[in-house]
Length: 320
Image (cartoon, rainbow, N blue to C red; front, side, top):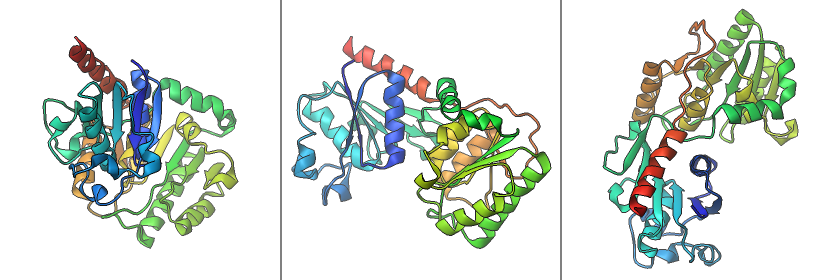
């Protein structure tokens, strides 16, 4: 298959999912970050007159023939463009949309959406979590790139920090309980800690946690001043992972590693996120922060390759 277009609004989480799928399909990808202008951004992915005018003139130059054989979009803004590509190419472009577009999925050739969204359809592929690149080869590359982590004492506890989102407050009680829980586990088990923040992590919380964990062996990454982002190494060397409850993407990548994953929920979660957590717990992939999990290997949740295999079948069937 010739080059695929990977289309997002520029959000890192959306681009990561779409790129992971392109890589699993083994197709070269041209990444297009194409934010929409109003009023098209308000209605997307519903069509308004003058669809290509949704893009700024400089972006319109990139959204032009020759059309790709495959387009992968992620997010509501991208959904309008993948829908338009299917129409502009007279359906020669196989249009794949990741995440629920919130309208009839028949406007795309395939829609990939997590089970907790509740979308159904003949061209819908359900996943438990979000698409990601984590597999044995990816983890091995992370260990190779950050080989110094091998010298840290085991068990290595990797800590992934997200941030506040609608329905999840990061108040002092949450921060203090999370910090105390991680410290107690380190005191009880020994080992070391490998922690990283995200763009959404409140700086005061990051500073407080860094100070609280500084007495344990390990490292805390809070930005470029601490060197290259060690995220692949943190997952590659993890014996146990603690992840905040707010991010479907972070949780999905954590449970793809194949080690116990712990989280802290301090109050009822938003409905969709609560359903996702419940599915992970039912599968045996997610545990409370203070839960005792004796084994350090659990079945990894890896769905991207399975989704790619199914898409290959659909593309081949249409070509035939």
